[in-house]
Amino acid sequence: MPKAFEFKDVIKNYGDFSLGPLNLALEPGTVLGYIGPNGSGKSTTMHCLVGLVKADAGEMHVFGRPNDPNKPEWKLDIGYVGDVHVFYENWSGERNLKFLRQFYPNWSDALVADLARRFEIPLNKKAKELSSGNRVKLSLISALAHQPKLLLLDEPTAGLDPVVRTEVLDVLFSVLEDGERAIFYSTHILSDISRLADELAFIHNGNVVQRHAKEDLTDLWRKITFQFDGNSLQLDAVVSHKQEGRDHQVISSNFEKTLSNLSTLGAENVQENRMSIDEIAVQILKDVKNVANR
Amino acid sequence: MWQIVKNELSYHKFILIFGCITVALFGNATKFGFERFDLSEMAWMVFLGAYTVIYTKSQEEKRNQYFARLPLPVKSIGLARITVLYLVFFGLLVLNSPDHLTWKALTEDLRSWTVLLGNTLILIAYTLALIVADIHTIRNRKYRTLFWVSVASYALLMTTLVTTSLIYYNQQSAPYWGVFLFKKPIIPVLLSLLPIPILFHVSIAAFMRRKSYFAA
Image (cartoon, rainbow over all chains, first blue to last red; front, top):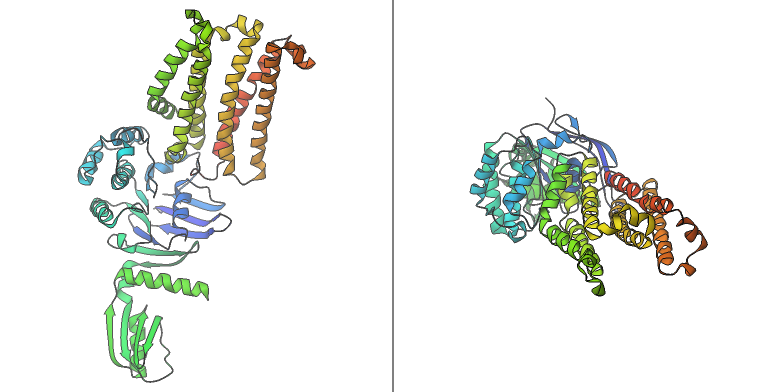
């Protein structure tokens, strides 16, 4: 079965920033969180895939079809929501959706009605009169109404206040949890996607530096505190280490290995605590940044 | 492609209806005995205003970005974009000065040519603006050739317009070659119309070669 999408050695240069060579793929039905700081290349990755920006080199496929701008059938399988929500501003939400409907054979008016009800969006209002939150909702309805097999969400809630963001995401995730579509969700706020994601890919300076199943991260990562008097402390899988006198705190990416080391060294009062996915992501990005700066 | 054209015209229907009525009435004011007030000048201003609103709205509302997401070949989108501008232009032009577009006027009356060239110059200027915006995203010397083809077309048309105007208003100050050319009306006809199909195609080619559909 073809992959939902596949990047093969994709490069995009902007002079002061370069994406890739990027090799990334997503299995159908999988949710991949694409995590990275601002300016790391998340949006550029999305833009190249959707065809809003032309890559300088490499190949991209969507469900086995090359993303050729002159043979755009592959776009029928994609629903895209970016951080900018573009509409015919003087038309109502309903009229904008009617415009889009002409291009998608799988467009479902019933789904539009259901989504509009769940999002509580006034579709009769002109696009330019919609609040930021409602513009995001209208974009989401536009992206979902043709029932795409791959949903690309590029920080769709950027710029929204926390209350509206939570409200939008709650409805969105309840909608998405029902489906079996592949989702590629880029964000720098991990809590936005941690509920849905099966896998997490971390991007830094235009390159995917790590990719893990979410379960692996929460199963393996631990914050470990202990007391130790010696000077030479060699521990496996430690990504962060703080010390005050004989009190130590480490973050381990494989707690079993670290605990085994500590046991051998004779550390005292060893305590391990599970970490939230947000804490783990922050630590991974910090670690990547430190490695890059060394 | 036609879905986009149809929707764009529908989106601008109020300005188009207003423009068409005003241009048709004012542009043909002489027929109603209003020669003294030179209402055809006002028609020209309305023409220009309506055209500018349609053009700038499309830029402001990031239409390129909206359309680039649709499952349409990029060539169709480029074709639709320029077709909308040309349809509106020729529609307004026909309403503006039907008298100037008769065969008799075109072969015998230089004023008709001045009007036609003046209006065509507007069309060319707007097409050029589109091409320049497209080429700005293509950091490639090869495609900058498109830009110079466009500038050459514009210069050609401008030269023809200036020459026509000089001959029309004061034949003494017109260059000899201009006076010579306008003895054979078919030559300025071809010269003034030549850039239109060229730039039509250049604008589609430039749109297809854009490296980004974000910029206006």
